[in-house]
Amino acid sequence: MFKCLIRYNNQSHTVVAGKMKFFDELYVDFQATPVKNVAGLKTGTHFQITIHPKQDVTLEKLSLFTKQVYKGNESVFCNGFQSWSESREYQVDEYIPPLLSIARPLMQPYGDYHIDAVPRTNGQLHSWTYGYIRQEKGIAFLGSLTEKSAFSMIVYDTQKQELQLQKDIEGLELKHSFPVLDAIYLEGEENAVWDTYFDLMPEKRPIAEAAVGWTSWYHYYTDISEEIILKNLDAYKKHNFRYTRKVPVIFQIDDGYQTRVGDWLSIKDSFPNGLRSIAKKIHDKGCKAGLWLAPFIVEKKSELYRQHPDWVLKDANGKPVKAGYAPHWSGHFYALDFYKKKVQDHLTTVFFTVLNKWNFDMVKLDFLYAVCLYPPPEKTRGQVMWDALQFLRHIIGDKLILGCGVPLGSSFGVLDYVRIGADIHLKWEHRLLKFLRNRERVSTMIALRSVLGRWQLNKRAFINDPDVFILRDAKNKLTPTQQYTIFLINVLLGDLLFTSDYLEDYSIEQLSEYHSLYKWRKSEIQSVQQHDEVYSIHFTHDKWNFIALCNLSAKTISHQLNKKAIELEPYESLVLKKIK
Image 1 (cartoon, rainbow, N blue to C red):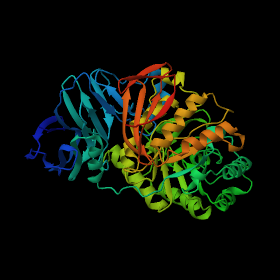
Image 2 (cartoon, one colour):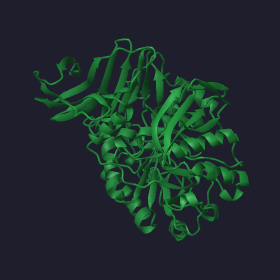
Image 3 (tube, rainbow, N blue to C red):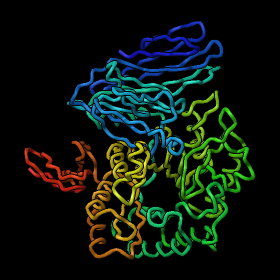
Image 4 (cartoon, rainbow, N blue to C red):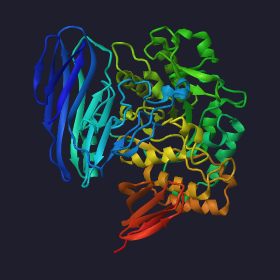
């Protein structure tokens, strides 16, 4: 039986599902409706909670909870706070280590480290928007159907033997009726559960097409120019392989074209003909043109910050809110105050210029989490994030949006493409950031874990962007085996397939690998299963059944498949065909 715990004005009450409960300051309407039975679904309940205050109240906590016995052989899925946050299945006795204190001044804004309600003790694992318990047969799933009222945190509490869904509402000043929770609990076969979850979601399904293409970041980073972009455009079209001819091709300019972060219409001298000219040349090659921006952040050395310091978001002490630290910019960068009309007017001008004057077809919008770091007293973080994404969707219109650094639940049905993992590294792991326990770190290992953990979102919530694959030799320390594993996982579990390689430098062997892996596009995924650091991807292609085995570890592993041992070398992946 599910119950609701509500805490406000230093008092707590418990309400049973299906009841309306009256208190002196407010009353709670807690509705529970059975979910229509479908094939593969064992049970399901739809929960809705609305709070009706009789006077002004300050909310402190709202939690939907039930008893849950956790077995030692079960695992639970922990969805990270935003795109880059590590997301995978954990054993019930595992622990999510906190960010080291020495790293907090630089890295705390990136994840959920600044949210006090997040559990940090042994015996409590947490997940954002949705989570599930992988049981012997199927999964037990708890998830929010909308995050427009507040972010939702799933807590697996093995100490209390409880399963909880907590709304991120601490400190919210409430003056009116508030539909605080709209969530669902389901048990059954995995794909039946996921289909039911998204069928009941009020937001529309994604309609963007799968796409392939090129982006400048993972080869040139901020050191880009018009010459570099056009040279790569020619090389990409020269090697426009048969597998890419029937899908849209997006050619994207990433960070480095602007003079400073925040000064999006001020272009570096290395682009002497401006961006409109480059967009036209991209179109002339038959590609869509994409451009990177980070609309809600600004560098202190930018003209925007110098001219409009009042546009920067301030905390309770009047200090600018730091959104992170980037050594390739000018150190700390700051969040903009989205609710200021002048900020919204400025962003409207920026996007009108990029999309209508320069004629770009897609914008990659990064560091989106920054907009909700410090919400006003009458708003939750989730409400700010929702308002900001709706604003972007409105001013961008039918042009494509690739979201990055964004809380995923807020983007369901709103954004076209969304990054579902961390940035790929030019090595397998970033040892320093791993030591600091940064869950949003640049890391190939973390990126692939999250892509494997979030595969179910593809074409249900948006089109998955698993980040780039890398096959080149130059400026790269990934081994050929590691490169193969990255490409295989990306092509199976993502439908936005980018590279940053200069394709003219590919050897015959690299071109052959490109051909051999691209054929797996449009495969239908049945399941992804984890056994330590070996992942098995079960899928169909051309009416045949296959299994891809991917070893993400640095050791040789003997994997049992149909009572036979298959040796997987470090970082090795194999694709096997299932036959009778």
